[in-house]
Length: 392
Image 1 (tube, rainbow, N blue to C red):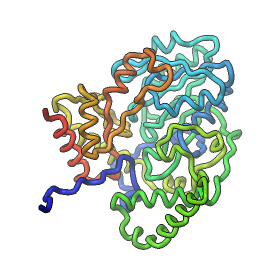
Image 2 (cartoon, rainbow, N blue to C red):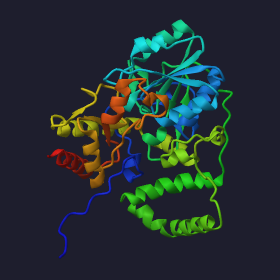
Image 3 (cartoon, one colour):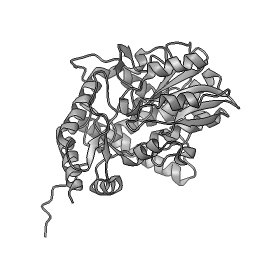
Image 4 (cartoon, rainbow, N blue to C red):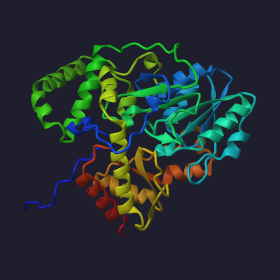
């Protein structure tokens, strides 16, 4: 018997390259992190964190205040500097518990790291005032907020330093940024990582676009070179350990390799940041976020993490709170729906009761793509699968 069931679509979790990526029309211009001050374009956000901590003078014996709900990739740069991460609490809505943050400042505290979850801004000016009162430096973690505006200023403009993860917002294989509107970055010297890295960064971005049915003409034109590249890479692997042509962060690893500290982002990734419009990216992400919100809000067993989408916010993903997250995740994962569970499991001592709200958020928040390269049919399919998974 021949099945009449429609094939399951392959929906990209992160933005992938397409011809539409280069369109520039957008109704409202939004700035990006790169408008907040001088920047150094590196290969990942965690590399940018390490460089920021080094610029701050963080070293052995110092403490760095870190939100209890965080990516595991935030901790290795702190440990690399010989410092100790001290976790502060969040409220149930993922905003900073300012009283707890203030209570954890001690004589060894050197810096505060603040995360703008999913692109939604924290009360950064209040944290800035607290840091100024105690002589601390502020590092804004804009890994979820590469594009956007807060109270008339670009994201990342309030901290001493800010870091971003451009590969969460642009269709590139690697990319991060260190920015500062308060301090010169003259001591941050970067150089290229070699021809292999440059080629891999470009080809992997192209191949990912091809895998999801984008750029058919380019795929046909590059069929033979890509086939030869694949054969050559297999041969290299058979002969022994293959060289690390790109940082492990490009492959969803949380590892930290100091060897990439002085490497600049690839020419391909830097070119994409110049050629693609942040305003277009923000407009489409906001529209997709609102489309998901309108379709999913009110369904039993789930609710949006944020009650509204403020002006100036360019969301990374669409985060939902699930009453029964394990059951819902198992069902949608089995259906092939792309989903992110940020900060789960809670790494380090954050899992040992440092913040009950952080542990609860890590377990109950399921996030779905709303990036600019999603098609309407793909969004409709995501909504349909979530609704189906919620049925008893």
